[in-house]
Each structure stands twice: as C-alpha cells, then as structure tokens.
Image (cartoon, rainbow, N blue to C red; front, side, top):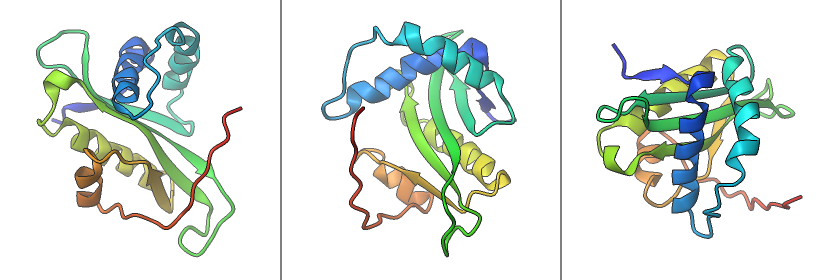
Length: 156
C-alpha cells in the first residue's frame, strides 16, 4: 500500500502550510502568511474536484497526526501543440515540499511519481517545473532535463 494519497479539501490548511515551507526556502521568498486565509476556500474547492486539471498528492506525517509530511501539486494546461506534445497538453509542477523533520525518507519522490502518473493518465506530452538546487538531483533521477528557455515573468 502506498503512503501517497490524493489530497482532499480537509487537507487544504496543511497543503498551504507546506506550500509556505517551499516558499520560505526560495531565494527572495515572501515569508508572509496573511494570504493563506484568502487562498484557503479556493484551494479546498480545487481539491474537491477530482476530474479537473489540478491535483495534489500528499503523504501523512508519520509522527504528527493531522499533519502532512510531503506535498506535490500540479496542473494540466492546454497549450498549442508542437512536435513533442502534439495534443498540446502540458503538466506543470508548482509545489513540491517536505516538512523539514520528514526529509530524506523518499516522500517527495513517491509523491512526484504519483503526480507524473496522473499527468500521463491525462495525456500530457510534457511536464515542466522549476527546480531548486537542492531538489534538482531528484528531478534529474526522474528524467527531467534543463531546457534552453529564457523564461520571463510579469507580476500583475
């Protein structure tokens, strides 16, 4: 039996907590948490949708009942097709976090494997993510490679 399960609406507060763990670890990450209250209803609603384009997979914390040890979340989006993804479906991983006291146990890898299977089931032709230096070996072991894409962002 797998330790990994699909997150449910009741997991939303813990999903936000682990997302904040990830944000706090990023260079220039915003440590504020006031936004959690505004994000919670929308996240819970998305977690209730089991047939949409969003999924989160989690591992329950083995030492703290009611807490999560690991989180992986992603979406499937349509983008105009191309040779490597003719149907235009792309997976995007945007939250991978492990509670600091639950690291080095394989939880993030197990969650990533479930998310990748979910992407495959939906016909995604590729999966994209942004990797921290610490997480890059995990993603490389799963088959991710760097691409020469000069990604830019405009905060609105």
